[in-house]
Length: 187
Image (spheres, rainbow, N blue to C red):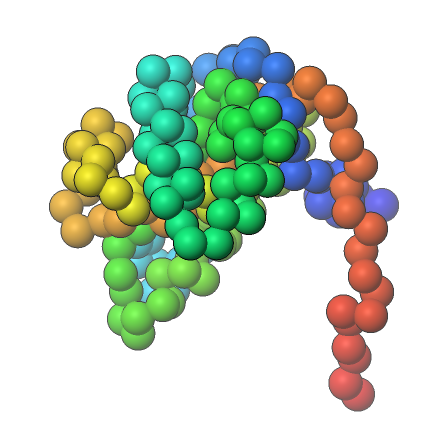
């Protein structure tokens, strides 16, 4: 198996970080991998923001939990609380992906997915645990959205796309078992 396929096979979603910050050169390499992602018509409707500021991450986590607690369906909130009440799992770092709407609407989400996967695979290849974190969006769902956009230096017209949490695992987990029934070959 080549190194790329091995990295893909070994990657798992870490939800138990030990709080140790990855080295700057590794974070820079991950950011470089992100911006090497292809995009439709080379629009690059994304901004890659490496967030190391622990206070800002904590503020976003607090706002996200507050928004999650307000939902009628409290199952996500209760699940997070049962896991220690940390929306971002003690991750010391986050790659925030801001995104600008493209035409046709939704095309930017394809590009965003490619960027996010580049981040995750680059991190895994460097021994850095990671998880795609849709919960980051809850920090931008309330009254503090504009404040967070400003602090994270979102370009004008950009919205929260996704966050990828980075750090080192407190507990290492195995990747999910691929469901072979999800593959169909048409000849």
